[in-house]
Image 1 (cartoon, one colour):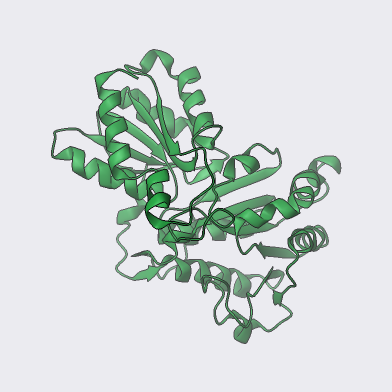
Image 2: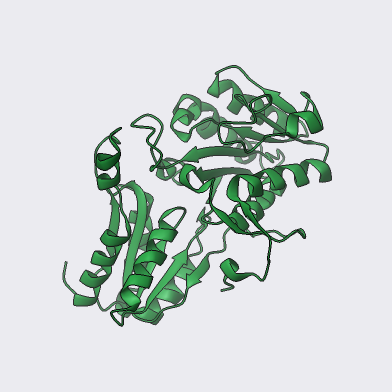
Length: 336
């Protein structure tokens, strides 16, 4: 797999800027693309992703809405069904629960229920994840809800490069895509080429090559995995880090290639460990590569508890590089 973290580009920008460029470029390319959501116009969005776009495109294409998540989701569905290519933004992924009937029973089902005659080129964007002190109602990682629903594609990026390329691919999709953006990564800087490019949906990326154990992960946890890998390199342990990037469709082949090389797997995710998306990855590895494993597949996830507002408690309830390193050492010992 190509390592997009070293793509040869020299320009570095924030992830929030990379996402803005993706939206801007697609709006320039296709006049049917528009952005809708809460405080995305005058305020430029909660994380400044849409800053300046209202002045450039006007209120007909940068559409501020009331605090009404179900209306945002439903507006996107209607617009997509009638020829537009909307990007519907939720201020926090936690609030998507208010719109689940629209997303699960309408957006995800329409193409199937109309025999493929209906297109839904609709992208839902939402910040998710911990590490910003936003407490229990603004910090959850609920991606497992959405990958469970047939008819939805789900993506999440760990770098500005991937964020821009994946979002551009999502906007061009004729199917519903849910794009989760980790709040703690908006201020991350990274290489993003000035020339146009796309990152395909459904293709994982090996962020670090290794031979002893595979860490399968996504979003912010990619960076904790890389930090742990760097620490363990000093101990003579070679860690491979696979960023799945696309939760559905999942690049199972890339995961299996890595596991069959290293013969060990640690699945890392920020969501609550119990019932999290990482359990699906672990299950696929156990079912499809059992004979290649030299140790049980291990999972590292968050505590089964609401996210604390207290910063030390919040940090303690989620995976970090030390917890990842400990799981890798455990895998190499071959014991649970």
